[in-house]
Image 1 (cartoon, helix red, strand yellow):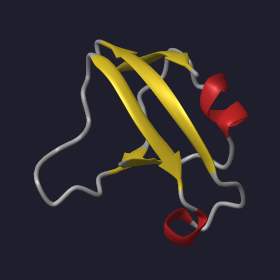
Image 2: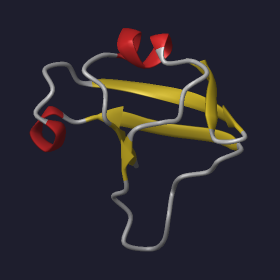
Image 3: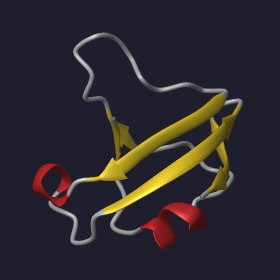
Image 4: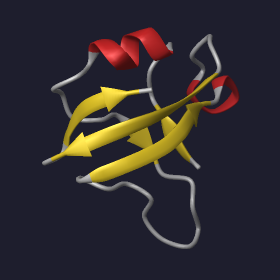
Length: 68
């Protein structure tokens, strides 16, 4: 699962129209898609950010268009 490098889901949602900050975790290949849906989480143990959350991000042309 891809890790979103944001302190909270609200901050991630506020980044609509911006490129995604993320950390790849898969040993089997890249998870990031510049077009499509990405499901991921913030893991405080990895990012040292306070809140843990899970989100689905829709990307278009390398920019965030929707966060659920």
